[in-house]
Length: 496
Image (cartoon, rainbow, N blue to C red; front, side):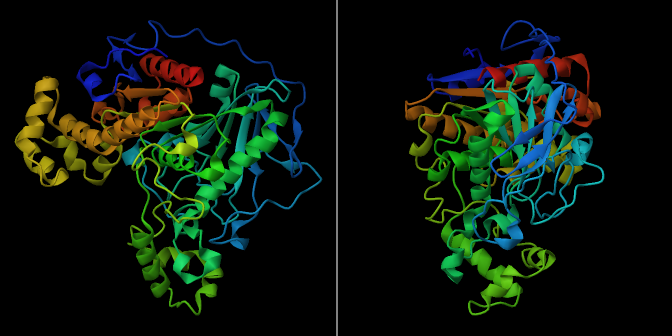
């Protein structure tokens, strides 16, 4: 992918970082080629109506969807209720073909918002059941053969608290067919069940602040050991994710146990420079333990407490289980602080963000932000950027973007502070290692949904990367301009 112009933002990036801008101007493509790529030829399905693949643990039976072999709900780990706050264990092997025909359980979690309606067309209705028995993954492959296709492993968003690999946005049929690649999405432990730091309560909990990340490592080990049987190449694996999924990619880039399990990485609107500290996370865990009525002497009872009790004890505690902890066991350093992680110095990186991320995050919580005027904007900016002079910030953006609207400025500045800055920091520190190329993208295409008031929201890129415009009506609409951006982004990710 070639470096191209990036407006006034080009100066933000080091010369060693290639830049991709994604937008449309008058309906014409502005980057990554002058015209949309030609539609790929369809991949022929094998004659078997229900393909069966032998995995390390036992055979699984899938089905074909639009000519792509799909295997949903493939078990890669044992029921985590038997390993609560412990590293995952492999599943018990089986001999008869296990159905892999439908998505399996999601990890235990509380209900999440829908971005003010932006995410509605992606949601399973009704929602899939949640359970501690959640270590499942999904595979899409053009053919069950020995071709050794590139493998793309997706880690879902939702912070480290919510979500699953089963969203309609992540359906892998179109991307697998378009690029002749294998797509994998995963479920893994989240929130308190994945990251509650109980290390002070005994050696058996020494790594409890990292077990969700260890689930992700286990899923990549499954890919290494099994993906060849699905037509994939275990020596050509790309990990990618958006929002919390991008932060998960950051986490894996700095884990010794993940080294060698993937060979390229993409971080979409999920820059995670630092993890929670042992001290802050341990203090938060102490509060959860206290609310459960437990002590160090009775801590073993936490292994059998009902899920709802643990969720209630953590209610309002924003640090407890908020994400990976530098435990000193499986996670020994922050992802990109103070520098790029040596564990993945040789892994090429693609990273970037969207222009107005907060229209899917802050806007739904405070709809008045969509109605900001030049008169009311300074007060809102002062609240968003505490200790900063809002008039200077506003003047800078209005100078560089003369046609910008007041709400757009608010959300753009917020996205630059929360997503762009961290992404540039990671790109800089990765590039400074000089061991692998770094590519930077920025999504500027504004969605037409909801009267255009959402501009370029958080997660808009997902449907584009997966070439799933038809499944993203609530996020991007389904028009030809949206498809043109999907053509650009999916082809760029496949080229990477």
